[in-house]
Image 1 (spheres, rainbow, N blue to C red):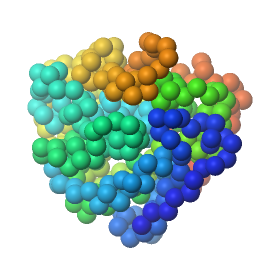
Image 2 (image 1 turned 180 degrees about the horizontal axis):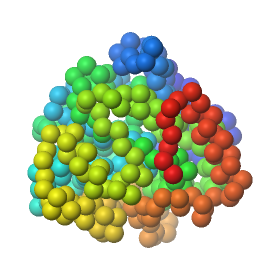
Image 3 (image 1 turned 45 degrees about the horizontal axis):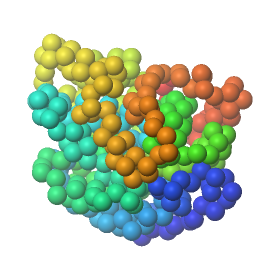
Amino acid sequence: MFSYKPLTSELAKAIQVPCNGPLVEIHLNDHSNLPVYGKGRKKAAYCVLNENYKHFAERIRNLTVYEDDLWVVTAPKCGTTWTQEMMWLLDHDLDYRTAADINLLQRSIFMEFSTLVPAIEEDTVSLVEQMSRPRHIKSHLPMALLPKQLWTVRPRIVYCARNPKDMVTSFYHHYRHLHQYTGSKEAFLEAILEDQMIFLPQIAHTLDFWALRSEPNILFIHYEQMKRDLASVLELASAFIGKSYTKQQLALLEEHLSFDVMKNNNSANNSALLDIVHTISKPEEPSDFRFMRKGQIGSHREEMSPEYIARLNAYIERNLNGSDFRFLE
C-alpha cells in the first residue's frame, strides 16, 4: 500500500535528529480510497517522516473512524494547538473547567506522536483507538496517509492553513528546541526548499484540503484569519459544528484564546509536550523556549534574509502553479 524512499543526501543527513531517526519519503501507492474532486483524481501529497513510521503506516490508514469524530489537521506550526483548543471548547459547550483540569494532549490526541518519537512509552495510535466518543484527534499527516475511512464515514474535519514563510520561521525554532536540532539554520532552510524536512511538503498538504473546502464536513480556515478576526472565525466554527452561542459567550472565548492567555495556559500551551520530549532527549542546557513563541504574522522578515525570502516566494509560487489557492499574508 505504501512505498518508502530513504533520504540519503548530505542535506537530509544534516537535518536529521536522534529523537526522530532517519527520514524517508512515504508515498501511498493505491489512491482508490481518496476523494475525487474537479475533473478527476488528484495525486495526493506524500510526506517526509521518520523510518519508524513504517511500523504504523497501514495501521493508521486502516484506523476505525466514527461519524462523531472531530479531526484537526494542519501542517506543523500552522495554528494547530490554537485550533484544537477552540474546537474542543466550542464542541463541549464552553466547558472551561474540564479544559483546565484535563490537558489538551488528552482532550485532543496527537495521533502519530509516538511514531515520530519512538522512545516515548505510550502508543498514541492506541490512545486514539481507546478514546471515549466523541473523539477529538489531531494530525499533521497529509491526506494520503490519513485513515481511509475519513472519506467514507465523513466526520468533521477542521483544516488550518498558514503562510509558509511564517510557518518555516516558527518550525525552525520548534525543531531546534523540541526536536533538539543542532545543525545550521542554513541547512534547515535549504531542506525546506528541497522538500526534505519532516512532516513536509506543506503546500501540497494544504492544496489537498483546499480542494475539499466545499464539502459540508470540512471547515477550511487560515491562521491569519484567526489572528486578524477571531470573532468571525468563532462564529464560522460554531455554525460548522451546529452550535449556537451568544456574542458575550464568544467574546469570553476569544479572550481565552488570545495569544497572551494561551501561552500561559499550561493546560493548552503544550508545555506538557515539551516536558515529555525533554525527559527523553535530556538536553544539556535548560531552555526557556515556549511552544507558543510569538504567534505573529510576518515575523519571517525579522529572521530570514531578503535573498532567502525571495527563494521561498519563488518556491511557493511554483508549487501553487495551476491552483486558485493563495496563502494569506
